[in-house]
Length: 215
Image (cartoon, rainbow, N blue to C red; front, side):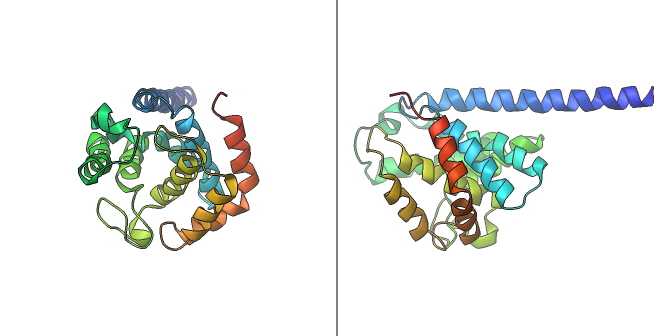
């Protein structure tokens, strides 16, 4: 009887976690679809982040939590007006300030959540634009003051953003994207995350092909 109860509780726990993941993906897709050209961005992001977390030596559980939480990295963009979010061209200083506020907004959305996945989502939303050298935003954190989950998602986000076309830019050639990642090692990106990225580059590129945007 005790085993049966324990098993039932375990299954309920998994069901709750699965529900959390479903809700996160649904919310993320609603937010991403406000921008018509983001497509499979959150799916690529989740897989890149999971692969990097595994390569960095995180446990299966930790890696899965990052995979589940990473789609909400830009949740705060729900508060950005469409006229700014989908502007066809460069943003001025005030528009950039408004866009940058999405990191704080995303954190505020989830900061009081109890589930571990949503707590991780709050941290990632807050920190994924911080830089290893302290020149990011919103708080100018540096080095290990930025959570490893956020450092992983930061690289995954930039790689995908550079690799894909947007309403305001063309996709960069693959060799240019990789050169940008290399140049960001130790400044924008955690050197260890960059090294892990290049060790698993074939797997990263396979994910990019698998979730390619429709022609």
